[in-house]
Each structure stands twice: as C-alpha cells, then as structure tokens.
Length: 590
View 1: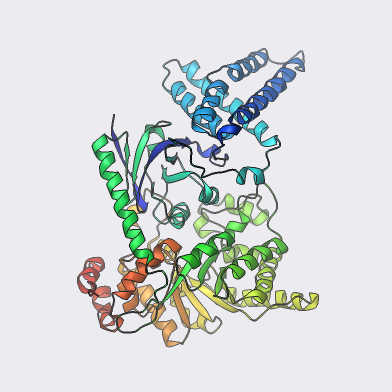
View 2: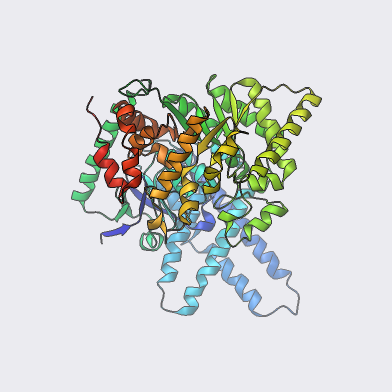
C-alpha cells in the first residue's frame, strides 16, 4: 500500500531506494558492502560471534549460585534459543549473501524485521520478548566488534562497490546524531529520513553538506516504513512516498535526471569569478567539518574556508579522551595544506546543544544534565570553563598557521569580558609556543555574531576583533526563542522575521563602517532566496556548503548590487519581508 509521510525539507533533491531501518541505539553500527568472494567469510564472522555469545550464556548458567532466582536460568535458556533460531542468524546470513551487507549491518537489519513481528503480536508476554531479542543482538554486535576486523579495516572496505542488480539504499531512523551522520559521508546511503529534527538542526546541516536528499521531522516514519520497502524521498517538498506506484517512480526518476542536468550546468560556473553585474566582487567560501572535506571545497570553486567546524574532531571517538594538541595540529595542518594557500577560518570547538563529546569532563557532564542545553555551557563558555583544553586547541591552530593563512573564529560570544578572557588565553598559548620553540604566524581573530546581545554591542566587539561572521542559524534561534532541533516548533523558525533581518542588516552595516570584514556562515548564506537581500545589505562574503556554491554564485552573477541597496529599507519595514523581497529583487536576465 502506498503511503505519503510528510516532514520538513532540509536537503533538496530526489532519492529512490530501499529502506534501511536503523534504531537510534544502533545507528553507529558499521554499514558497508562486502564483495561476493568475501560473503562466506563474513557469514563465518557472524556465526563465530553468535557461538561466542552462546558459550558466554551457557557459562553464566553453569556458574549461577544455588540461591539464584529460578527465573534467571529460564531467561538464559530463552536467550540461547533466540540465538540458535535460524530466523535471526540464518536470516541475517541471507542479507550478507543476497545484499552483500557486512555482518553488523545484516544482523541489525534482521533485528528490525523481527522486532516488527513482535510488535504486531497480540499476546503481551510474546510482545515483551522483543527486549530479549534486542539484548542478545547487542551481545552479538559487541562480539563482532571484538573480532579482528578493526575500524580501519572496515573503513577500507569497498563501501561504494557496484554489485550487479544492487538497489540504492536510503536510511530511516528515529534520529541521527550529527557525529553519527559524519560516518555516512563515505557510506552507501543515497538519502535520509528521520522522525525528529528541524531545518537547521546540525543533523540537517550535515545532510546538506553531503549534498544528498533528506527529510526530517517525519514523526512516524520509522514506525510506518518497513525494512526493504521501496521509498522515494522528495527533499524539495519534504515528502516521503512509501511503495510508490510505477508511474510515480518514473516521474521521480525523470526529476532525478533533470536535477543532474542542472547540476552539470551549474558546475560550469565553478571557476567563474563571483562578480555582480555592476562589478562588485563577492567571496564564495566553504563550510567544512573535517580536513578531508577541503578538496571538495576547492573543487566546488571556493576561494577559502569560511568555517571549519572543529568540534567534529571531538566526536565519534569511541570512548577515547579528547583529541590531543598534536592530533588537532595534524588535522588543521592537513586542511590548511589542502587549501593550497587559500584562507582557512577555524572555529574553536562549539560543543553543546545537539553536539556532545563522547567522554565529557566535569563541566560537560553537567551540561548533559542541563534542562536547556542551547542556553547552557556550550561553545566559548565551555572552552573558557576548560582552559587546559582551550589552550591546547589554540596552540594546535597557531602551529597550523605556519603552513598557510589561518584565522580563528570564536563562537557564541555575548560579553566583552569573554573577549578579554579569550585574548588572555590566546596570549598565554602563544607564549607557551615561543617557550617551546614552536613556529607560528600572526593570525586574525574573529567573533561569531549569533546572539542578539553580540549584534547589539558590536561596536565594542569590533575594537577587539579583526572580523565577524554571522551565524544565522543560532541568531534566528536566540532571537525568536526557538529550539531549532525541535520539530514541534519548527514552523516558528523564520529567517524572514523582521527582527532577524534587522539584526543582520545592522551587523553588516556596522562592520562595513568600521572597515572590518563581515561574512555570513549560516544556512542563509547558501539559500539563493536570500542572496539578493544580503548583497543589498552590503554583504560581500558568503560561506556555505561546497555543494551550494555554484547556485549562489549564479545568483550573484545575476544581481546588480548598487540597484538593490536602495530597496533594503522597504524589505525591513514590510509586514511580509519575504514577499516584498521577491517583488523587489527579481533577477536581471544576463
């Protein structure tokens, strides 16, 4: 039966494929294809892990004390029976042989199939046995992780190998943490659907950086969609179609071809300078999450990196401690070298809200218990609360500056006292490097304007900083008191709100008047609907996901900045700024 599930459009395009359901607790299970010749060996991995767990459970039974509750041996018997049932391991082996899934993926896929069967049982006792099934599966997954296949070996697996007749796959989950999204950059998935999330949640941002269709806030998607269902993700409309009829499939396949043709047309603009019709040069910068994203930024035609989100180096560390100074230095140096002399703006760690580290220190642990983490100890507040960590990061960034043009960007500043504290820490970090004989260059230091307070005291901040970058995602969130990751209030998240536009316009005007560079690095920078308005406000530096650069550059090439500048007041004073901007800023044909 065909279903339509509505959510929020967060990454445009069309994806067609079979659904892979992943429970939130198992989203970090490795997902990759194994070659046909390795399928038998992969099944043996699975069988060995099953046998290891069976042996553990039998050993536990034998070692039970005499006064143990009589239910305990019976429960262990149930777990052993579940492991030896062919509907679990035997059926998972079929996923390996027929779909070429690795063992962990195959087992997780089969668990989702069986879990649905248990949910549909009328007998309450039998329904509750799903928990037993999940427990034994987790044990087998743990046993698989203890086998000789290291994480490095799994990453080296042929994740995108083409198997004859292999269907495209799309991921369906209740939620995906931003750190977990990163592992899918090299994965087999062509699209994402989640039950929760908002348009500017960090999960959505990472999906856009991967340039694949995604729909979030689809609420019941992970319950309504079944493992292996054919689905269409319409990333433009925010719609997921389950088991579409053939005529609908053909229509969407045609749209896929049209989208690909448009991308190829835009690709021809990659190395065209971004200059308005009246000769105003505009910087097209890239946002990246990891050092290996830098080549894609160059390939997209970026003239530098306007935002390197360094916090992703602190995530997905599998229980390890925070990255050391040397580890960070190597990552920053690799990114700087990859940009071949173009500027690299590194934002200091922005942990908090929907981004957290694996093994928090005392301050981060308190943050995790915060009732409102978006207003808690995050970003620069966390850095200043962890001075040793902050100095280590600053030293690593400074050391990387010896290999190219590096700038430091500080997130979530709201007080002049924070600025003074930061420069004290920075001065100490520089002195430590001098004492150690480490090379570094002078670096420019900038402030992110993402709290209304920062926009309102910008004159004071500009006396301390070399440049500013407007983080529109958080600026909108804090101006409108909206949790941007909460789909229940997502409809209130409005980048066209007059208060938001006034803060942005004022920030750009103040920075320009002071002769300080100003850029926008939030999602508005990559949205072509805002390009004419931002140019009219005086913005000449945009930083966005590499995949968005060509479309924004095309919009810049079609604008006459001088003519647009006189229209800003009308937009800001309008009751409907979006409609007014559309009316005033119709592009001039070229």
